[in-house]
Length: 82
Image (cartoon, rainbow, N blue to C red; front, top):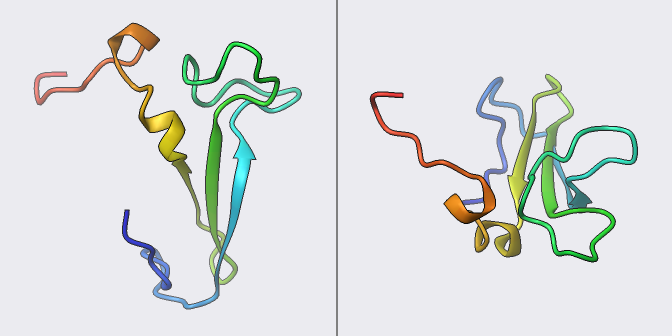
């Protein structure tokens, strides 16, 4: 993943990142279901990128979570017909 320093929405350069955010919030849904370890209370990790100019937020799964993506963890690959 290429790291952008400008916002794709507004073109601003006031972009910030926060690493190692848990994908399973304390009161919210698990945003990356099936990709957490058995004993992980915070779920898979994500990196959040935020544009301070327009508020656009983007979420990126960690490399560890990406390595677990597959049909055995409940993820289905999309095709053009879906």
